Image 1 (cartoon, helix red, strand yellow):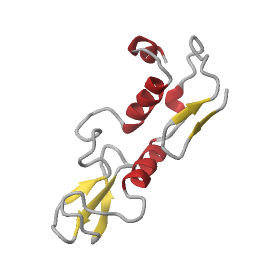
Image 2: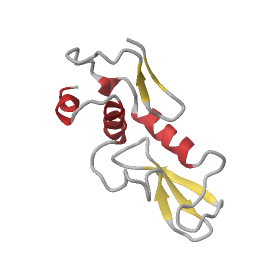
Image 3: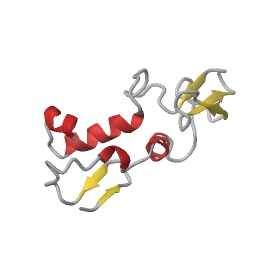
Length: 118
């Protein structure tokens, strides 16, 4: 079975008949890959503040609980934000990798019960 991340950050599985294999999708991608893909999709050309849309943004370290999650500060409005600010993934306690894998499995047509098994 070939597994890869495409340019949209979606995990692709060539052979969809993995049901019963318990393939351990959790270990196929890393947290860093997920955050890099979010950054690439969110800011394809240049980093922009989600609050004022200024390009005057600087890095301000990493998150304490999720070290792959980059923090930023806008020099235009002074607001601080991170990779997930103002996204559907913000404010949840599950790691980003879990959300990405769930979306992948949903795209393969698996039910919630099947996803919990994988």
